[in-house]
Image (cartoon, rainbow, N blue to C red):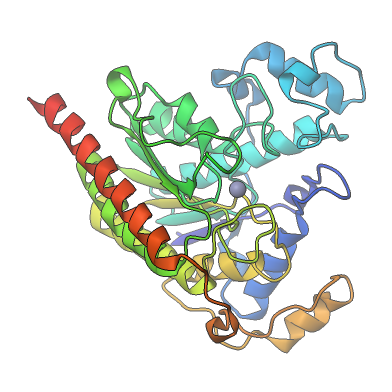
Length: 387
Ligand SMILES: [Zn+2]
């Protein structure tokens, strides 16, 4: 048995929405190459996605929407494409869109299956994490919701209760809405507040409904939130929520766009804080669900400097290893000619070179108050349910 599995297929890098699009699959190749060069990823850990019955897509996505994705993928026009979010600036139509989106779903379902079945303790699909895809609409660079399909697989095939944790800078809206009234899934999202950032949701009052009431947990963060404040609210919210739910499996969406360099969001985290959060999630999985943890990628629009280092740290944490401080020269040499900016030489950020964020204390204090109020509301709901 491979203790930790890395889902890999060269086709997964074909999710190129458009040449100039900020979602750049080259970050997957850079990440894998960095892991290979550092010796953190070995041949026997790489696992191909299992065959996937694409009829499973319709468990969560409307059939008419799937038909529209298929038709436009083949270059056919579709009268409702725009209404389905297809052919927009965010979600341009590209050849093979249906097949590659389905492949990404297959990869995440395989990662979940490996862990749920006990074949692996932890698994990663860095091509996955398309958390904005909705039941009947493409949104935020996402066509099909691989995460929700993976979670659904864990419920249907293994009867598991799944905690979904989303630390992408954007709210994990698609996954939240697909399980908003489910008693089997808790969704927890820490993100830049929807007051300022796409998709505009993820407010503290979105707590779930019906059997899922109290199981949607949203922690909106102020723009320019830094490491200390992120770590503080993470500790205030995430362990308590997970302990209240007692999951059998944790699925982590590890979008890397909360980093200070990311051009599409306004959070100001460093790789140091991101690495610490990955370690914490591994600890929580060990403590609460026998280490059963599946991770995916997600956002991350600083594709050369930030994303490969972030996901290398995440993969190293899954393997109980660490990325060396100095990155291999061979990695930089291999890629530098194809990259429009200098690749970093260190695995962590040089925090001394960063300018202080103004209003730091006010931002931290606001985040703390929001987290405390959120938890007091949720604790009340959880207690009502027990009585
Ligand atoms: Zn994002």
